[in-house]
Image (cartoon, rainbow, N blue to C red; front, top):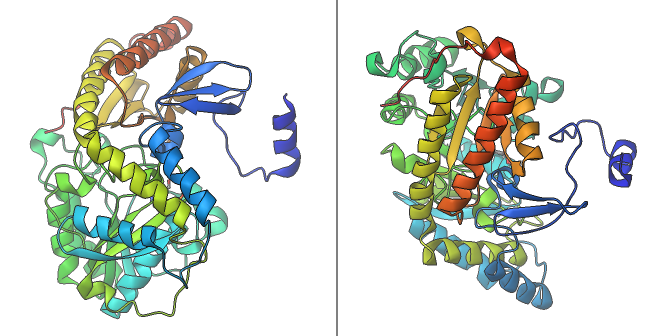
Length: 441
Ligand SMILES: Cc1ncc(COP(=O)(O)O)c(C=O)c1O
């Protein structure tokens, strides 16, 4: 074990989970590649959990941040800076519908906390609807909102007024439907769900357009119109968590753009500043006017992260990266579909743009977390970094920086192909796993 590994074991809490039997210790990166301490180079197709949105050490971001660090690093929200109001103005311009006024923090967790608080102040209600399999962060409320028990440490958030409705998990539809026979039963359940498990006075319905940590679970086109429509009848505001799906990742400006619904509140973090700590909550004026405070975030809106966000948004716009995410994402998807044809342990392929997930299974769709773990090791050995997630730990998450090229996607697909072929060679029992793929509409 390396010195870094020894220090981790001694001085960091055991709750920090790292990928790989031999955890990666990274030294530096450029573009879509990172290099470890031993000098091995990897194609990074997870981008620090969908956070390095425009590539490592992007010169435009580096220049903006360096300039800012030399001028002024911190002010708190008690003093204004140009970068903070500029990012707020930018968000108001690029987000859909009437979203207009922002509050800045330093993480997705805080962005969601702020959103819940805003909804409660605006509606006068306390109860919140979240979705099964969701992930919202690591505070008490965020762990409560999270729809996966593994992430509710110590039973966090269980006593809060939160109920979890069905998500649209088409591959494992709780109603036994397939997309071609889907009557959107999961969404329609929302009405009875609210009437039987809540007081009927709801502050918010919070959801990710595509569930990230949940394993890139991708709802059908009408899911949000139906669920949001029902939740609104009971007074709820719609909080759209774009922490993973925001800023072009899915091939449209925001994940919710695929679903034709305008949120009352949107939350961001991760890719917004290409890796600098940031969280943002934007609301319509009608909602934001109730958020009168006092409230403070010491590091929220700090000028360094704000400059990083402005530079990141500039690059996304100037280089048309939303369109690149759509085009390279389609190419990635075609390649993954072809791999799934050849290797049916790739049971389900789903996602949009550069947010593609693959659920690994054995016979009868039994989740194969062990194979997913082994696949991750085998792709790493070939020089490719991927992510993992899902309630059952069996979903491979693929989300490279949005500057990725077609030839890098091909390179990654070739490494996955080779890793799969070696996995099949090592496991006789998976040779006759039949295809269980569904075709998304
Ligand atoms: C959809 C979503 N919301 C919120 C969060 C929490 O963000 P953070 O880890 O920055 O607190 C995450 C983190 O993975 C996320 O994926």
